Image (cartoon, rainbow, N blue to C red; front, side):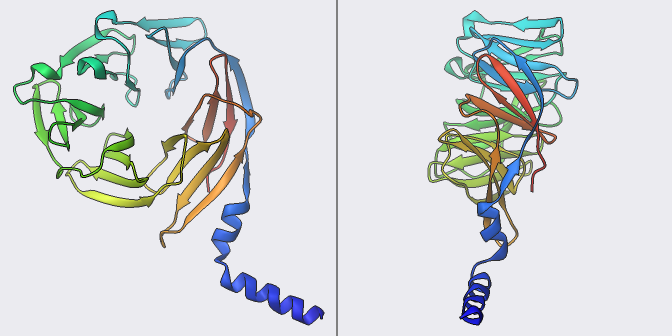
Length: 271
């Protein structure tokens, strides 16, 4: 009887992919490293200098200890997106007015761009900081990804037209990522090359770490997924103290969980 049970167990492990079996069931422990009270409507994240960025009553602010910098622009309506990748040149996107504002490290306005006034018609629904004085642009009119040179006021497309609308998008200096309505995940590099990165899990909120990994929340639980070289997705739950939260932010193995009243920072090691 014992031999039979062992044979069954051995067969089970052979049939089930080892990494997926443990990857789907394992949990990642998150170690609390700090907890801070805040008063904001939306927390944006931290930069490499330790400043925290948030939005309260449509006022964008940057804080560290007793230092506080603020920027507001009532005429452009609600802030739709903030890009703090370059803390010396940040991007505030006002989608309702088809406009963007670039700010310096003290939140002074560097320039303001109204894309409706461009020589080539542009209706922006996706934007982010790229390299060489360029902004990533997704132009709804032609459904193409392109670049806008904010010093020369020049616009060029680099991708073919996309067939599905965005459910989520995120950019870094060299890549424009997006997830379509069917949860298909894609990337576009600075040369316009589009890659399919797989299919992501159903999510309430999501943050892309790189071309293989992403963190997402579903029903107030937090998970990290890794799409390996064989295109199998290994998903692990991240154990955190908070049972309810508004959003999260991940950078350099620090996971920030926040509500409108506090931020809890955890140290995690991604698989």
